[in-house]
Amino acid sequence: MSPRHSPSAVKASTSMSSSSPTVARVLIDPAGLEFSVTEKEPLLRSGLRAGLPMPHDCCTGNCGTCKFQLLEGEVLQLWPEAPAQNARDVARGRFLACQTTVTTDARIKALGWPGELVPNRPARMEAVLAERRRLTKSLSHFRFRTELPAVFLPGQFALIAFSGVEGERAFSMSNLPNAEGNWEFIIRRSNGPGTAALFDMPVGRKVHIDGPFGKAFLRETDRPVLCIAGGSGLAPIMSIMRRLAQSEGGGIIDLFIGARSADELCLLDEIESWRRASLTKANYVISAGDRSDWGGDVGFVHQFLVSRCRRPLSDYEVYLAGPPPMIDAVTAVLRDHDVPAQDVHFDRFY
Image (cartoon, rainbow, N blue to C red; front, top):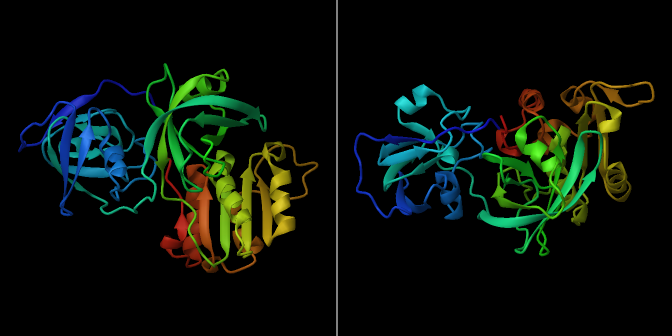
Protein backbone atom coordinates (compact mmCIF):
# COMPACT_ATOMS: atom_id res chain seq x y z
CA MET A 1 0.00 0.00 0.00
CA SER A 2 1.26 3.47 -0.78
CA PRO A 3 1.81 5.85 2.14
CA ARG A 4 -1.15 8.00 3.03
CA HIS A 5 -1.07 11.78 3.13
CA SER A 6 -3.16 14.40 4.87
CA PRO A 7 -6.92 13.70 4.95
CA SER A 8 -9.15 16.10 3.02
CA ALA A 9 -12.74 17.09 3.66
CA VAL A 10 -15.45 17.23 0.99
CA LYS A 11 -18.96 18.61 1.33
CA ALA A 12 -22.01 17.65 -0.73
CA SER A 13 -24.16 20.38 -2.29
CA THR A 14 -26.93 19.69 0.22
CA SER A 15 -25.92 19.13 3.81
CA MET A 16 -27.85 17.39 6.56
CA SER A 17 -27.65 18.65 10.11
CA SER A 18 -24.53 17.69 12.04
CA SER A 19 -24.66 15.11 14.80
CA SER A 20 -22.29 14.32 17.64
CA PRO A 21 -18.62 14.95 16.82
CA THR A 22 -17.85 11.32 17.57
CA VAL A 23 -20.84 9.52 15.98
CA ALA A 24 -22.75 10.23 12.77
CA ARG A 25 -25.61 8.45 11.04
CA VAL A 26 -25.45 7.31 7.44
CA LEU A 27 -28.50 6.47 5.33
CA ILE A 28 -28.02 4.18 2.32
CA ASP A 29 -30.24 4.88 -0.69
CA PRO A 30 -32.30 3.25 -2.08
CA ALA A 31 -32.15 0.49 0.55
CA GLY A 32 -33.34 2.82 3.33
CA LEU A 33 -30.88 1.28 5.82
CA GLU A 34 -28.98 3.30 8.40
CA PHE A 35 -25.80 2.70 10.36
CA SER A 36 -23.63 4.74 12.72
CA VAL A 37 -20.03 5.78 12.07
CA THR A 38 -17.60 6.39 14.90
CA GLU A 39 -15.08 9.19 14.60
CA LYS A 40 -12.60 8.69 11.72
CA GLU A 41 -13.62 5.08 11.08
CA PRO A 42 -14.07 4.22 7.38
CA LEU A 43 -17.68 3.92 6.28
CA LEU A 44 -17.04 0.42 4.98
CA ARG A 45 -15.97 -0.96 8.32
CA SER A 46 -18.80 0.74 10.19
CA GLY A 47 -21.31 -0.71 7.74
CA LEU A 48 -19.84 -4.20 7.95
CA ARG A 49 -19.76 -4.02 11.75
CA ALA A 50 -23.47 -3.19 11.58
CA GLY A 51 -24.05 -6.38 9.60
CA LEU A 52 -24.85 -4.69 6.28
CA PRO A 53 -23.93 -6.16 2.85
CA MET A 54 -21.46 -3.40 2.00
CA PRO A 55 -19.74 -4.08 -1.37
CA HIS A 56 -16.01 -4.62 -0.86
CA ASP A 57 -12.96 -6.61 -1.89
CA CYS A 58 -9.54 -5.36 -0.75
CA CYS A 59 -10.44 -2.83 2.02
CA THR A 60 -7.19 -0.97 1.24
CA GLY A 61 -8.19 1.53 -1.47
CA ASN A 62 -6.86 -0.45 -4.41
CA CYS A 63 -9.84 -2.13 -6.10
CA GLY A 64 -12.73 0.38 -6.17
CA THR A 65 -15.44 -2.16 -5.31
CA CYS A 66 -16.68 -0.13 -2.34
CA LYS A 67 -17.18 3.15 -4.21
CA PHE A 68 -20.24 5.21 -3.23
CA GLN A 69 -21.99 8.42 -4.28
CA LEU A 70 -22.30 11.16 -1.65
CA LEU A 71 -25.84 12.59 -1.80
CA GLU A 72 -25.95 14.66 1.40
CA GLY A 73 -23.52 15.47 4.19
CA GLU A 74 -19.78 15.95 4.54
CA VAL A 75 -17.02 13.38 4.25
CA LEU A 76 -13.36 13.22 5.21
CA GLN A 77 -11.02 11.33 2.87
CA LEU A 78 -8.61 9.33 5.00
CA TRP A 79 -6.34 8.56 2.04
CA PRO A 80 -7.02 11.02 -0.82
CA GLU A 81 -4.35 9.41 -3.03
CA ALA A 82 -5.86 5.91 -2.93
CA PRO A 83 -5.17 4.22 -6.30
CA ALA A 84 -8.81 3.29 -6.96
CA GLN A 85 -10.02 6.90 -6.73
CA ASN A 86 -9.15 9.86 -8.95
CA ALA A 87 -9.89 13.59 -9.18
CA ARG A 88 -12.82 12.97 -11.51
CA ASP A 89 -14.43 10.68 -8.91
CA VAL A 90 -14.09 13.35 -6.24
CA ALA A 91 -15.53 16.03 -8.55
CA ARG A 92 -18.56 13.80 -9.11
CA GLY A 93 -18.93 13.15 -5.37
CA ARG A 94 -17.78 9.54 -5.56
CA PHE A 95 -15.53 8.13 -2.85
CA LEU A 96 -14.13 4.86 -1.53
CA ALA A 97 -16.01 3.64 1.54
CA CYS A 98 -12.85 1.93 2.80
CA GLN A 99 -10.88 5.22 2.76
CA THR A 100 -13.59 7.74 3.67
CA THR A 101 -15.44 8.67 6.84
CA VAL A 102 -18.20 11.20 7.52
CA THR A 103 -18.07 14.33 9.66
CA THR A 104 -21.85 14.91 9.65
CA ASP A 105 -24.94 12.81 9.20
CA ALA A 106 -24.98 11.76 5.57
CA ARG A 107 -26.95 10.06 2.81
CA ILE A 108 -25.09 7.92 0.29
CA LYS A 109 -25.73 5.60 -2.62
CA ALA A 110 -23.50 2.51 -2.56
CA LEU A 111 -22.78 1.96 -6.26
CA GLY A 112 -22.37 -1.82 -6.03
CA TRP A 113 -25.24 -2.31 -3.59
CA PRO A 114 -25.92 -4.84 -2.31
CA GLY A 115 -22.65 -6.67 -1.84
CA GLU A 116 -22.44 -10.18 -0.52
CA LEU A 117 -23.37 -10.40 3.14
CA VAL A 118 -20.35 -11.53 5.15
CA PRO A 119 -21.45 -13.84 8.00
CA ASN A 120 -18.98 -12.63 10.66
CA ARG A 121 -18.93 -8.97 11.63
CA PRO A 122 -15.38 -7.55 11.82
CA ALA A 123 -13.90 -6.42 15.12
CA ARG A 124 -10.73 -4.52 16.00
CA MET A 125 -8.56 -6.08 18.68
CA GLU A 126 -5.07 -5.96 20.12
CA ALA A 127 -2.79 -8.85 19.16
CA VAL A 128 0.68 -10.03 20.16
CA LEU A 129 3.18 -11.59 17.76
CA ALA A 130 3.61 -15.05 19.26
CA GLU A 131 5.69 -16.78 16.58
CA ARG A 132 7.52 -16.14 13.34
CA ARG A 133 8.85 -19.03 11.26
CA ARG A 134 10.64 -18.93 7.92
CA LEU A 135 9.12 -21.16 5.25
CA THR A 136 11.15 -20.26 2.17
CA LYS A 137 13.63 -17.57 1.12
CA SER A 138 10.81 -15.04 0.79
CA LEU A 139 7.82 -16.52 2.66
CA SER A 140 7.38 -16.66 6.43
CA HIS A 141 4.66 -17.89 8.75
CA PHE A 142 3.39 -15.49 11.43
CA ARG A 143 1.15 -16.30 14.39
CA PHE A 144 -0.56 -13.55 16.37
CA ARG A 145 -2.54 -14.13 19.55
CA THR A 146 -5.61 -12.21 20.71
CA GLU A 147 -7.56 -12.49 23.93
CA LEU A 148 -10.76 -12.96 21.94
CA PRO A 149 -11.39 -16.06 19.82
CA ALA A 150 -10.23 -15.92 16.19
CA VAL A 151 -13.58 -15.79 14.40
CA PHE A 152 -13.47 -15.93 10.60
CA LEU A 153 -14.27 -18.18 7.66
CA PRO A 154 -11.59 -20.06 5.70
CA GLY A 155 -10.47 -17.78 2.87
CA GLN A 156 -11.04 -14.45 4.63
CA PHE A 157 -8.46 -11.78 5.49
CA ALA A 158 -7.71 -9.22 8.22
CA LEU A 159 -6.12 -5.77 8.33
CA ILE A 160 -3.04 -5.32 10.51
CA ALA A 161 -1.91 -1.94 11.84
CA PHE A 162 1.72 -1.57 12.90
CA SER A 163 3.09 1.04 15.26
CA GLY A 164 5.06 3.64 13.34
CA VAL A 165 3.73 2.56 9.92
CA GLU A 166 1.05 4.66 8.26
CA GLY A 167 -2.04 2.82 7.09
CA GLU A 168 -2.89 -0.87 7.40
CA ARG A 169 -2.00 -3.99 5.43
CA ALA A 170 -4.34 -6.78 4.37
CA PHE A 171 -3.25 -10.37 4.96
CA SER A 172 -5.26 -13.58 4.60
CA MET A 173 -5.45 -16.10 7.41
CA SER A 174 -3.83 -19.46 6.70
CA ASN A 175 -5.20 -21.32 9.71
CA LEU A 176 -8.72 -22.20 10.82
CA PRO A 177 -10.96 -20.27 13.23
CA ASN A 178 -10.23 -21.17 16.83
CA ALA A 179 -11.19 -20.36 20.39
CA GLU A 180 -7.55 -19.79 21.40
CA GLY A 181 -7.29 -16.52 19.47
CA ASN A 182 -4.58 -17.60 17.02
CA TRP A 183 -4.40 -15.64 13.75
CA GLU A 184 -1.87 -17.15 11.35
CA PHE A 185 -0.57 -15.69 8.09
CA ILE A 186 1.82 -16.65 5.29
CA ILE A 187 3.47 -13.43 4.14
CA ARG A 188 5.99 -12.62 1.44
CA ARG A 189 8.74 -10.18 2.35
CA SER A 190 8.71 -7.09 0.14
CA ASN A 191 10.25 -3.64 0.07
CA GLY A 192 7.11 -1.98 1.44
CA PRO A 193 7.30 -0.39 4.90
CA GLY A 194 4.46 -2.57 6.23
CA THR A 195 5.95 -5.97 5.50
CA ALA A 196 9.45 -4.72 6.33
CA ALA A 197 8.23 -3.68 9.78
CA LEU A 198 6.51 -7.03 10.19
CA PHE A 199 9.58 -9.09 9.31
CA ASP A 200 11.73 -6.99 11.65
CA MET A 201 9.20 -7.11 14.49
CA PRO A 202 10.35 -8.94 17.63
CA VAL A 203 8.18 -11.68 19.10
CA GLY A 204 6.02 -10.15 21.84
CA ARG A 205 5.38 -6.88 19.97
CA LYS A 206 1.76 -5.71 19.86
CA VAL A 207 -0.26 -4.80 16.77
CA HIS A 208 -3.95 -4.24 16.04
CA ILE A 209 -5.91 -6.72 13.96
CA ASP A 210 -9.22 -5.74 12.36
CA GLY A 211 -11.29 -8.48 10.77
CA PRO A 212 -12.48 -10.63 9.28
CA PHE A 213 -13.13 -9.21 5.81
CA GLY A 214 -13.55 -10.65 2.35
CA LYS A 215 -16.07 -12.70 0.43
CA ALA A 216 -13.78 -15.42 -0.98
CA PHE A 217 -14.65 -17.76 1.87
CA LEU A 218 -15.41 -21.47 1.58
CA ARG A 219 -19.01 -22.35 0.72
CA GLU A 220 -20.85 -25.53 1.54
CA THR A 221 -20.99 -27.57 -1.66
CA ASP A 222 -21.25 -31.14 -2.92
CA ARG A 223 -19.49 -30.22 -6.16
CA PRO A 224 -15.81 -30.75 -6.99
CA VAL A 225 -13.59 -27.94 -5.65
CA LEU A 226 -10.75 -26.25 -7.51
CA CYS A 227 -8.25 -24.26 -5.40
CA ILE A 228 -5.55 -22.14 -7.06
CA ALA A 229 -2.76 -20.31 -5.21
CA GLY A 230 0.10 -18.16 -6.40
CA GLY A 231 2.85 -16.74 -4.17
CA SER A 232 1.57 -15.54 -0.80
CA GLY A 233 -1.93 -16.32 -2.08
CA LEU A 234 -1.13 -19.69 -0.58
CA ALA A 235 -2.40 -18.43 2.81
CA PRO A 236 -6.18 -18.33 2.19
CA ILE A 237 -6.00 -21.45 0.02
CA MET A 238 -4.29 -23.33 2.88
CA SER A 239 -7.09 -22.25 5.21
CA ILE A 240 -9.70 -23.49 2.74
CA MET A 241 -7.85 -26.75 2.12
CA ARG A 242 -7.44 -27.36 5.85
CA ARG A 243 -11.19 -27.05 6.31
CA LEU A 244 -11.86 -29.33 3.34
CA ALA A 245 -9.46 -31.88 4.81
CA GLN A 246 -11.67 -31.99 7.92
CA SER A 247 -14.89 -32.49 5.96
CA GLU A 248 -16.56 -35.85 5.61
CA GLY A 249 -17.69 -35.29 2.03
CA GLY A 250 -14.62 -36.81 0.41
CA GLY A 251 -15.29 -35.11 -2.92
CA ILE A 252 -12.81 -34.34 -5.66
CA ILE A 253 -10.43 -31.45 -4.87
CA ASP A 254 -7.94 -30.24 -7.46
CA LEU A 255 -5.23 -27.97 -6.01
CA PHE A 256 -2.83 -25.84 -8.07
CA ILE A 257 0.11 -24.02 -6.53
CA GLY A 258 2.24 -21.66 -8.58
CA ALA A 259 5.68 -20.43 -7.50
CA ARG A 260 8.63 -18.67 -9.05
CA SER A 261 10.96 -21.58 -8.36
CA ALA A 262 10.90 -25.01 -6.75
CA ASP A 263 12.55 -23.73 -3.57
CA GLU A 264 9.58 -21.35 -3.08
CA LEU A 265 7.20 -24.28 -2.63
CA CYS A 266 6.44 -25.03 1.01
CA LEU A 267 4.22 -27.06 3.35
CA LEU A 268 4.50 -29.95 0.92
CA ASP A 269 4.32 -32.65 3.60
CA GLU A 270 0.94 -31.40 4.77
CA ILE A 271 -0.34 -31.03 1.21
CA GLU A 272 0.80 -34.53 0.31
CA SER A 273 -0.97 -35.91 3.39
CA TRP A 274 -4.24 -34.62 1.96
CA ARG A 275 -3.54 -36.45 -1.28
CA ARG A 276 -2.98 -39.73 0.54
CA ALA A 277 -6.04 -39.35 2.78
CA SER A 278 -8.60 -38.08 0.25
CA LEU A 279 -9.35 -37.44 -3.39
CA THR A 280 -7.14 -34.35 -3.43
CA LYS A 281 -4.77 -33.97 -6.38
CA ALA A 282 -1.96 -31.41 -6.01
CA ASN A 283 -0.40 -29.75 -9.06
CA TYR A 284 2.75 -27.65 -8.76
CA VAL A 285 3.89 -25.15 -11.39
CA ILE A 286 7.09 -23.08 -11.36
CA SER A 287 7.77 -20.15 -13.66
CA ALA A 288 11.51 -19.56 -13.20
CA GLY A 289 14.54 -20.59 -11.17
CA ASP A 290 16.72 -23.69 -11.45
CA ARG A 291 14.78 -26.37 -13.34
CA SER A 292 17.54 -28.96 -13.52
CA ASP A 293 16.06 -31.07 -10.71
CA TRP A 294 12.45 -30.15 -11.40
CA GLY A 295 10.29 -32.79 -13.01
CA GLY A 296 7.02 -30.90 -12.84
CA ASP A 297 5.23 -28.31 -14.94
CA VAL A 298 7.02 -25.12 -15.99
CA GLY A 299 5.09 -22.00 -16.94
CA PHE A 300 2.04 -20.41 -15.36
CA VAL A 301 -0.85 -22.05 -13.55
CA HIS A 302 -3.55 -20.98 -15.99
CA GLN A 303 -1.78 -22.85 -18.80
CA PHE A 304 -2.33 -26.22 -17.10
CA LEU A 305 -5.88 -25.98 -15.73
CA VAL A 306 -7.62 -27.70 -18.62
CA SER A 307 -5.08 -30.51 -19.04
CA ARG A 308 -4.53 -31.27 -15.34
CA CYS A 309 -8.06 -30.93 -13.90
CA ARG A 310 -9.94 -34.20 -13.64
CA ARG A 311 -13.31 -32.69 -14.53
CA PRO A 312 -14.45 -30.01 -17.01
CA LEU A 313 -13.78 -26.59 -15.44
CA SER A 314 -17.50 -25.78 -15.42
CA ASP A 315 -18.05 -28.60 -12.89
CA TYR A 316 -16.01 -26.89 -10.16
CA GLU A 317 -16.56 -24.42 -7.35
CA VAL A 318 -13.39 -22.32 -7.70
CA TYR A 319 -11.27 -20.48 -5.10
CA LEU A 320 -8.21 -18.52 -6.13
CA ALA A 321 -5.69 -16.18 -4.54
CA GLY A 322 -2.49 -14.65 -5.82
CA PRO A 323 -1.00 -11.69 -7.69
CA PRO A 324 -3.31 -9.71 -10.01
CA PRO A 325 -1.76 -11.02 -13.28
CA MET A 326 -2.45 -14.58 -12.14
CA ILE A 327 -6.02 -13.75 -11.16
CA ASP A 328 -6.63 -12.09 -14.54
CA ALA A 329 -5.15 -15.01 -16.49
CA VAL A 330 -7.04 -17.67 -14.52
CA THR A 331 -10.40 -15.91 -14.68
CA ALA A 332 -9.98 -15.49 -18.45
CA VAL A 333 -9.51 -19.25 -18.83
CA LEU A 334 -12.50 -19.94 -16.59
CA ARG A 335 -14.71 -17.60 -18.64
CA ASP A 336 -13.59 -19.29 -21.84
CA HIS A 337 -14.75 -22.60 -20.39
CA ASP A 338 -18.17 -21.35 -19.31
CA VAL A 339 -17.53 -21.23 -15.56
CA PRO A 340 -20.27 -18.97 -14.09
CA ALA A 341 -18.94 -15.90 -12.27
CA GLN A 342 -20.88 -16.87 -9.14
CA ASP A 343 -18.83 -20.08 -8.91
CA VAL A 344 -15.48 -18.22 -8.85
CA HIS A 345 -14.40 -16.75 -5.50
CA PHE A 346 -11.52 -14.32 -4.95
CA ASP A 347 -10.84 -10.93 -3.39
CA ARG A 348 -9.24 -8.24 -5.56
CA PHE A 349 -5.99 -6.86 -4.12
CA TYR A 350 -5.07 -4.51 -7.00
